[in-house]
Length: 485
Ligand SMILES: Cc1ncc(COP(=O)(O)O)c(C=O)c1O
Image (cartoon, rainbow, N blue to C red; front, side, top):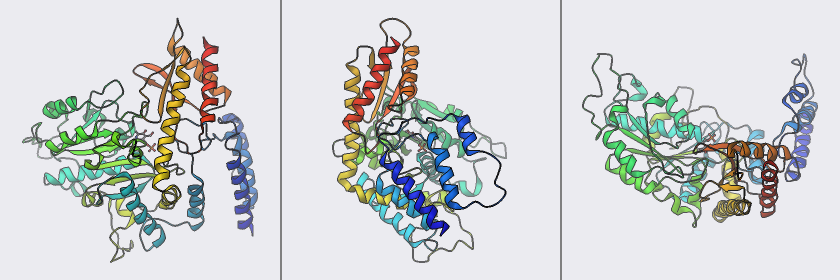
């Protein structure tokens, strides 16, 4: 009874919240001190009725919520949780299925199988790709790069899962100077430090330049720190810049500008050097689902691996990331573990845990499946194209204001906005305008720096954003820009 009441109350609160998403203040209204006071206190000495717990939790948390699912949330790159995906997430919690092995939840495992096939089809990736359902693109990058590390060292006769990295042949990793920090974080976990990574120049939009990539491949072995193996012999001997095992990390969708690396040209370079091409496509990979935008990711089908988020542009609730690897054996070898009690199905080829760094984990496949099924092929394309159109509308509207400059080419869903007063400090003006926009609470924007300039950063990624939301938010930014002049 108490369980039913708690679920019933949660449903009622959730319905109320969803219904007012568009009208709620986009920013939290409570201070951290107020939230600590409302939510804190000593650990209860004895049990409390579940319904009372949910009631008190919702009341205390509500003023501290940022309406990330609302249509005027343009922070980071955040999707808006499609209705079918939220409902599927509820069921995943009620069912409480670990997506680990077929035997633990045949339904969760089969949903992953089905969604895997749909995603490969939708994104135009090689049919043989293996797919892992992870927490986000950071862990998707990690998983893909672990597969790359496995495969490149295997080709040198080294078993990294058994023998580790100490004494291993050197690996060279080349990234663009605009690489997302999560790739650096993933490499760090894989034993490749940030000083060992070769960074090559990008253009004014943040796109890697293929000529600098080629040059780095020809010369950069000296930037790899070579570690002596246990016998004191430099194991890098015998590796020249031409044949040193190399991972090239490209990007589909720069987190500031939305720009794409030239993946086709990079795949040519990678092919000539037998390098592994990994593409971080946290949101930009979804361009592949649109006939009008997929030219941006031309060449993605030649990548050895790629990573994306479902909680960004597919509008699945947090957390949900996806990794695709064109070499399933390497993917599985890098991730798979076995123990006597982890009973595998003799006749099943795809145990869910073989493709991810975790064992027990949430059945994230249900929400991804629900997103793909509720949108269909045309719905995903519409969502991506609509957000891009709205980003252009935002930029066009803001550009009409004399003191506002758009810093990027709006090729996708990202817009970088700067306030430039006729005289004086544009960085200070941009910061001050951002603060006014945040105080007004009509929309949620974050700040960033682009090429040493302060900027307001807009990401249009929510399924429910309309033209009217863009216009209302643009007015708020324009009001702020006028006030700081
Ligand atoms: C290009 C890029 N890569 C990776 C990530 C990391 O994604 P997540 O935080 O979902 O793990 C992001 C996040 O914004 C991103 O924009």
